[in-house]
Image 1 (cartoon, rainbow, N blue to C red):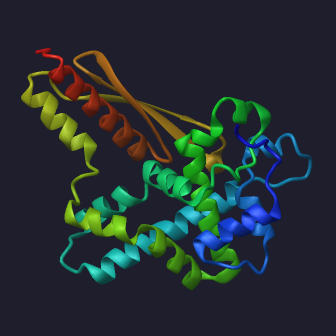
Image 2 (tube, helix red, strand yellow):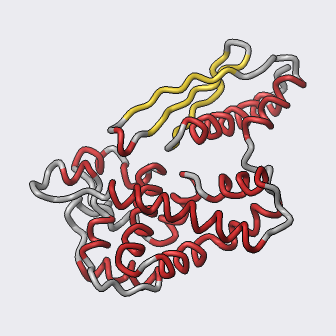
Length: 242
């Protein structure tokens, strides 16, 4: 059974601090990193993790870009962008959150919890970025950099080996054009407050809706939708469809 929205305790969050290898001078920052806006709406005076997530997103992008730039001088700016996109995305950050056991610590509103919020990639990814933001505020850039690289250095290395792996839009277009179905068309809509804006993209091929995806930018959402659509095409081919 999933823990209740307010079941987080200092002892359990100490375990999370141990998993990331950092001791907070201000433990309330880690507590805040676990507070989803749905829980704060039910708890008067509590601050959500949205501002920490915003900060952590910026720190994460900087650390990955800086590390890639310094350690891989052979990569062009375009390939560095692809490496960053392979690492700094909702799916990867949600996987990191699961590895750290973040799901059990999240403070979610009752409705969000009952609807499966602890398994939602977007919520888990935002929590990961909030933890990075909390470490940055508490220990500075050096500690935040250490944390990011301890979590993602292996994934960066894999992305450098295959920097085009994350370009799902290009691969989908190659598939559909080669198959005579034309160029994919994307429809994107935004939702959420301005400081935590998210986007939902839907991709259509030859008038058929093939996939949807969500992200913190229109580009991320389109890439996620293209990835889902690529999977749909694989299923179609496997089933013998033309």
